[in-house]
Length: 273
Length: 310
Image 1 (cartoon, each protein chain N blue to C red):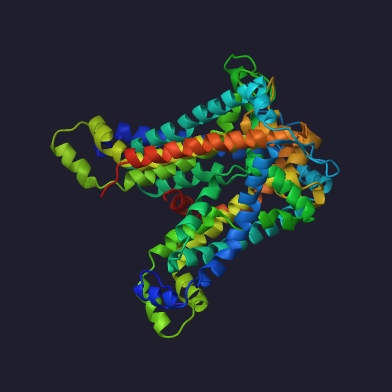
Image 2: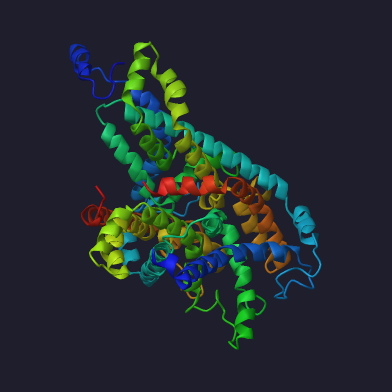
């Protein structure tokens, strides 16, 4: 291309990407740096703390049950992820394996459910959760999200490409559907399954609205709500706020650092459909 | 149990046994359908019913039927008009950040290669995985009046302070920016991937015919990118205003002077702050109907406009 011959264009390309990367990453960097600054230093625009201090972290860990909150979120996100993968697998298997009366209607209803904004159904959902005694509980966060249109559709697309002959051969050998699903289909779906698991975990971790309705006490909070409560309490205690925000991002940032290529691929795989 | 896809044998035993329903597929579908039915479709029906009632959400009180009064009230309420206008502004403001800019970047950087490319990709994607509330908190700090880094930078350049979250003329755009900040990387990656998958043969052929760089972009790249462009546009239109909810709730509460509220925030205010469940449900039904219509139009346009590389 032209840019190979014209170094200035190449420079412009890198310049664009550097600006974009800076805009993306700097706020996160500034959050971490601010959390490490002492109170005397916090309002300076210095890009690195004069003295690194962990006092804000100590304060946060003391002021709110941060570790418990992180544990709650991990538990909630893992359970949601597992449930969505499981219900998605079963539903996608039914939709790809059989042609039955109503199958396209079911497919349509599942896809359409993605379009229903949560705010539209929130009051009936809240009433139902209250009746079922799910208020202020982690189970209440997981149950309504135990199935997702997105999971069904991603796995449906993954399974559709699966060669029928293989399934036929297994059926000849006398394998039932349950065994075919777990021993033949699932092992061949590693890529979409991994992608879905990563996505479901991250989106459950980042879920905001439903916990906002359901969770009342800091002990039962997930990070999104814990942080929100902390923000209302502490107002402009910027150092403490940034320490809390950093702590609640650490697990997900660590996952990302380990798996970044994979995480990006999963988001794109999902987005491209 | 022989209802394997495309197997004509299925019909024979079925006819003999009369109306035998295939049970197995429904067993496999049951968990997903139960969750979606109980937590999405049934509440949707209930919300529709509730839109004809007045109710303050207290378990001790019974909803009172009011006919179409909720609809009449909402449609004439100035609050609703502001919320609708702001919803449109949120979406319009997000489109440059979620489609136009990423598209430009994807085209400009099409032949970026090597290890640096992966580094850029990993970095620009970070906002996507940062939790929305964390984004809210850290931008609140960056944009803080007087001591925030952005205002310090503005002061250094000789500008006066901007009250990013308290000035009615600026607040909505601040929230649009924060919402968009999380999306730029994702859109850029999606469009770059689509751009990279365009066969170089087309570009080569066009160049042989003497096409300029711009002509190649206009006549080859843009049409072939159209499915991805339309997908991102549709997602922004349908979900953009919902994505900004967390920032409205955490940063401005819909203010100042209702300047940052939108229909989704209005539903939340009616439902859980002023406890008028009927109004909230009515706003929900109207919003859902409007966005359903928009989705239908988008899908039709997408089918008609998208160009696929067969």
